[in-house]
Length: 161
Image 1 (cartoon, one colour):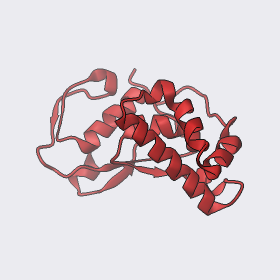
Image 2 (cartoon, one colour):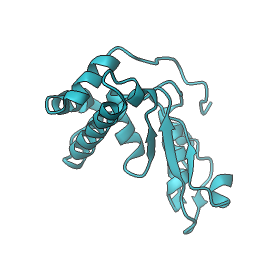
Image 3 (cartoon, helix red, strand yellow):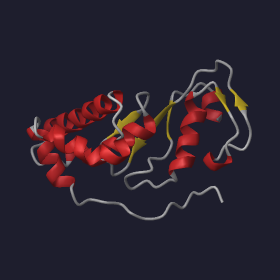
């Protein structure tokens, strides 16, 4: 809130997927507080009172930390269009180099945005959407192979209770 009040434009707000843990609902509430003009109370999302930001400019949420092409459906669903997705190792770890890693991430993102805009459910169809897109992108297919078994599964430390 202090960043938004002082004119900041972006902040890392948790990722939910990847290695930087965070509860999904709390992260979604945080993203609402960053971007929306008016946010209703919703204790399940960590919003304990209604907040009217009037027309104060929003802040863009940033996601990073162990994210790769297989996380793209969840990232698209959680953060939508107005966000920064920082793929460090998810780009640089591509077996063919940095540029193909960037291509793989971009193809995965565009496939997820297209699927979402067509009304497909990213939560249930995400892996299929990525596999489908990898048929048309050798870069994405290679990235899918590299990251297929990389998971960060541990409980969130930052919880509402």
